[in-house]
Length: 430
Ligand code: URA
Image (cartoon, rainbow, N blue to C red):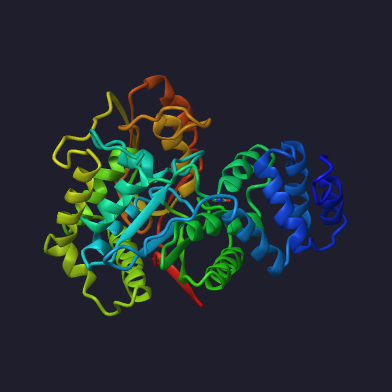
């Protein structure tokens, strides 16, 4: 430790390891010193594990989030001619909602700065999906972001390196030290980025189920409440929807396939669950942005949302009319018996799409634009023995074997129709 440092990392780790509360000064120092490279990765890993095992109280969580925000720059949208609203999903399978949602909300004159990430593991990333559109570019300067928000009104782009850099370092570390799935660290990671991004209104889509980080309603509600409290403290108009992730959203999982399905929604069609969730989130974003009671479905039917989509894709170099990439190879999985599809597991389908090439196993790997899974039935649908249940797509057919293995035990067919589960399970407001 250099003589001028306020604390010793070992003392901070020991405090949490032994179950004590970290002081504001300790937290502010450890995040700043880690960002500067004074606290080493192995020390931060030990601290993350101590937090995983011992937890943090509300004050510690709040100070931790603020310290991460203060590790980098903050964006400022106050010069825009319209107010801003954003959505963040905790991640799921087939979760393409940002694509129809951003232009839909922009159609009501609310700017949507959707600073997004790439997928890692079985959940897809919004940027990977958008990059299936020929010519589309994820990296924009702050000036370009402001120009698009003032024009078409919705932008989906990569978060700049300057936003919450402490989180970028810490997330990479958590990923390789089994310290991702703990509420204090997830909540502060997500909210530090969203608060630094500077949106006025924010709706959280907290996923619950087999394909989500949070497997139970109780855990998801606690995560949602923790994030809503952080947002309120920062002056953000915020609420959270708890939504179902036991089964994939819509009928596609994979980058280009999900763009195709999103365009169907923008054209007034698309699968019911995708439409319902898009509408629920749009209504909530507009309410928090001071525009309640809008007829959101009308903007999907009459082409206003589609117009915004075309403008926002073109503004980032994409051709909204270009055909999407088509996979070189496909395999069909058929129903082994007749009856009702009673279960189609989000985790299994997500891993299958990922192994087909839709996702990456390590940071920086290239994904296949056309790889993924098309579902021909959803839980509750009647199926007949031999009919196609799933079509798998990839450019690299040697991937089929392991991808099909991921589907083992992922679907069930039974004699009676299961009760339908709504996509929106609950709402948590401030
Ligand atoms: N997404 C994030 O940005 N951070 C987490 O910790 C988990 C999901």
